[in-house]
Image (cartoon, rainbow, N blue to C red):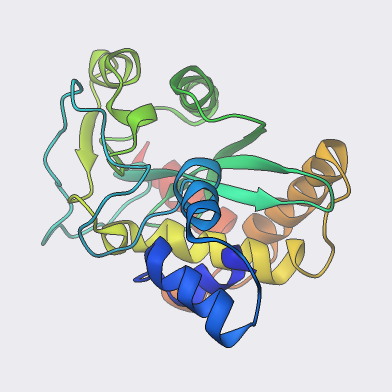
Length: 235
């Protein structure tokens, strides 16, 4: 319920989520439990400034947001990368995905039962091996992305690292829309039973998303066709 509600109300922190659950839904749940689930387990954060799990580690360096007023006009110019919480019938997992912002093509994705920098880096390494390097990689300020190992890998690849402003999930709006699409068009309709079922559902959905689904944000074109057609021309 929290996961679905957050997709429509990303400005709500744990306090307002607790109010909604207790006052509007009548659930006898404590504030402490909601804070634990919201911040630690689900890794959610409100788009407004405030404490949240995706806040960077204090010892980690952050990088400026490079997409403001930038015209994105070709594939592999900008990739966005993010993590989302996936509820299942029993337990939960996490999904990381990389999307090409020009074509909306999902470059790579992976699921895991924990969030860590090594997992994110492996996903990015696979994407680069298959599709080449982007000019810019945009992420939020989560500790996975601000970690020295992840940031150094990106920079050593000759990629500019861009990060959303603190407490501004809206800066990464394109991939936030991807999360809404994959959850409402697939996972909420067919709740995964376990990790294997989740993987199969996601594989089926991303195949559809990339190869069949027309996107209004790119003039009703299909991501795979737009990505590879223009990428080939550029090459």
